[in-house]
Structure formats: structure tokens, C-alpha cells
Length: 175
Image (cartoon, rainbow, N blue to C red):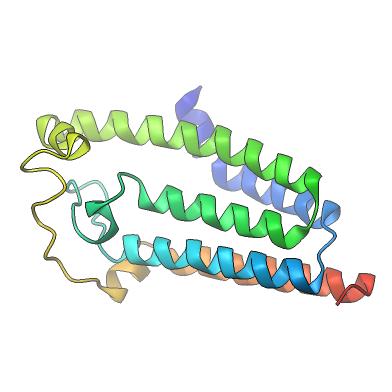
């Protein structure tokens, strides 16, 4: 069940996105504050994706030196930004429920995979012990790596969401 929910997080995100747009009541102020939060989340995601070699190693450089799951932290900030930009308590509840369920499932599924694939190396990383977060931290950020990890899709999604909320705010006369 957890693995299935983790796999369904993107299609469920589109359904939730449609509900967010319908329930949103964005204003100029909410869009500005929420946009800044969302951009911070996407910046963290790009930084993380620029250091990540999926399924081939335990990444310990960039934000992985400080956070076990920087992509998911970035996604949470993105969600918080969209919730603020939407200016709707119903949207806040919807986004919190979506992120809580899907990211929680994704983290549990990913951690189980990493423990199976990398064993003690992953346990040292999670424990912050030698061979964990401190080693390998010299790798440089790579925009090519971020693109290879398809982070441009998340950036395009954020842009589309903000543009739709701007459209809704102008349509509703709240800009």
C-alpha cells in the first residue's frame, strides 16, 4: 500500500492541483508571499537534484550534507508556498493531507530501497557517522545533473501553478 501510494503521488498531485485551483482565492499579497516560499522550495529541489545520482549511490554532497530528504523538504516548501498563494484554508488542508500521505509514503519506500541497496553505508549516512553525511561533500553542483534528474519538470509545474493562480486572481478581480 505504501509503495503504491508513493508511485501515485504525481497523478494524485494533478487531481489535487485541479481542486486547489478551484478552491483558491488568491490575492496580490498571497501570491507574492506564497511565490517567494514556493521559489525557495524549488531552489532547494534544484540544488538537491544537481547533486543526486539516483539509485547508484548514497548522495552526501550539497543539501544532503544537512538533510536526509532535501527533495521532499523542497516539495513541502513548494506545497506551503502554493497553499499561502491560494489564500484558502481548504487548500491548506488539502495540500497538507496530500503531502503528509504521499511524501510520507515516498520517504518510507525510498528508505527501504536505500537500506536494501546500500545497507550499512545508508545507515551511517542517516546516523551522521563517518562515511555518512560528512564524506563526499566536495562534489560540485551540476545543472546538467539537475536536468538529467528532470527537475525542470517541477520548475515548470511551479510556474504553471503560479500563472494559473495569477489568472484566477485577475479573473476574480483580486489583483
